[in-house]
Image (cartoon, rainbow, N blue to C red; front, top):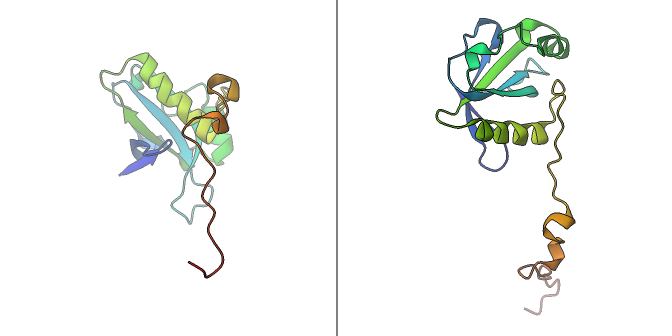
Length: 145
């Protein structure tokens, strides 16, 4: 199964799989730990985002440094799921960029890092200052058209 995470088109993650029975591959990638807030629905909440040069070295499933937070958030270690995005050939900067984007979008409870997903006017200027922006056309409400 595949899920899409991230902004716009997103990233095609493999999973979700039950974390408790998962054997991580020895490949570089980004991973997300999820759980179902409502077991009756097929919707997942992202509670942790990480990346690694070798997913098999991350101490999965439950010896990871953040595992106690995952278990507490989900209510049981058997309610945890994982989804992965393998990035073969992608360097650490690429994996970190994807992970940081996901952290800024989902604000996972068990990540200590927080990133702002908004832009600031001092970075690129105000939206209204751009030469390509103009007010939206007004629709006429009368029937004279």
